[in-house]
Length: 226
Image 1 (cartoon, one colour):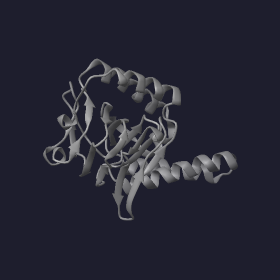
Image 2: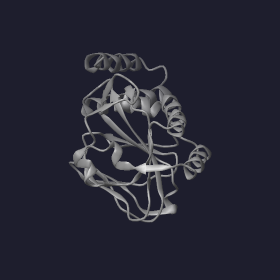
Image 3: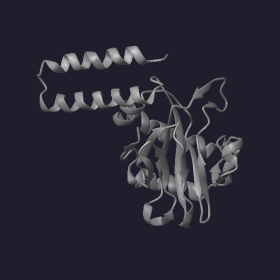
Image 4: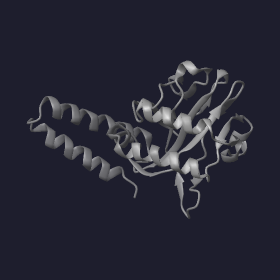
């Protein structure tokens, strides 16, 4: 499922993060790449063990916890601490698949990356190129969103970041281990959940709402991994 999560951050919050990142020190983005990804990755990254990355990451995590669309679509069991990257003119990230398992920094546990997410921070007019291109059975989908908007996509997807040809592209990125591992099952649950919500607004007293809600929770119970 390729899904836009609009307004995860307000324009003001995204602008504040951009201002903070403008004063940041950046490192080679290959520090978090696997052996294959490192061959095609050319960007800069905020050091993930730094105070600024942790502080800004908490802002993103708090926004995720408040967003019902993200919760419905990702069904998060664990979220990898958000990272931040910077693409300047000439930089890009070739086709790759994200690592299946990631060690959480400073913790003893790992997470399985079921869902990948990119939170756009720079206005689209500030840079040319830099589209996130996600491939699936229907072809390649180019994504370039407003500041504060996030896109979710299966971590199994082949994807890339098109080279930036002008300006600077700033973004945050993260991974989610979902309670429901299978993307097709997550998609069905998300569609059912949103349909129940819409029906609840249009026909709040319809008796089918109880049966549909029961079906949703019984499917979650059937497919959930704890």
